[in-house]
Length: 81
Image (cartoon, rainbow, N blue to C red):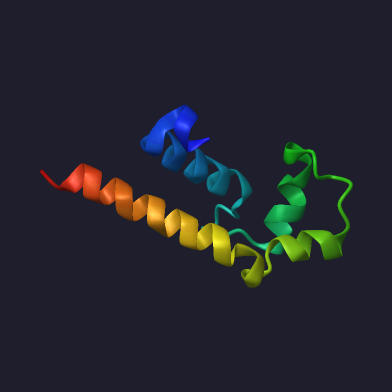
């Protein structure tokens, strides 16, 4: 996707997805906000256990490292001469 939308576009898409799933009053993706918004992603048929699994910190280790790398690259691109 990064190749298609570019680095800045990817960051915008990730932020949009986060805002879509988060609880606006807390600024976090909670189980309740994920359950509420799951149908928007076509995940309405997922069980509560499956949805809880989506919030498993270990599941996010690799994407988090990847995102950290992309953000670092974007920062170097945007803030260095």
